[in-house]
Image 1: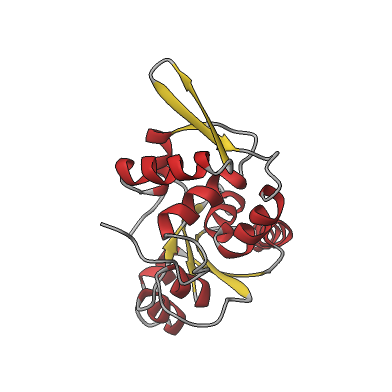
Image 2: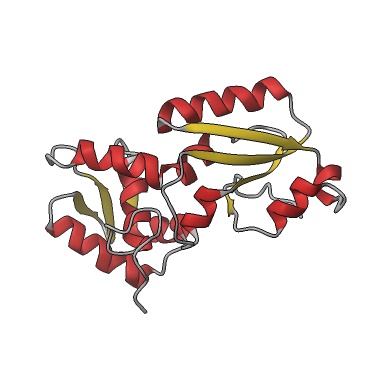
Length: 196
């Protein structure tokens, strides 16, 4: 099954290709096995293998084998690496960057919502100018805004956080909560922390 070109930036062959490139180019100091990447990106392994092979052949990624494992990393010596990284940071970077910067101790759930999430899920429209983030948990406001500032510096685009306690998230009388629950979201909650 071939995935469609992503609404966030339809110049990429597929959503899977863009996700793979974004992860590796935004983490150029690391190598990953194909199996780890498939799990992390929630992409079928065979699809990821095909995308990786194309990108290795183009010189955008590098691979090597270690025992039976195939390791992938970004080829930062490729002339297109820097501009491609910048493009991916502002288009697909929010999923990675928001997840990393909002990895706060008491964050029970972290969701990206609004226009960025809509484009991520394929809704056509203009490129998002900002990223809206909902953080559910009993957190200090300063910690959430510090995370937003760090994410904004990395992405080069405005990050707008809102906070709700777990009780507020469960309460269907909150109009923002209802709006978010009825709209496309991207869950970037750190693994093992999500609550209903």
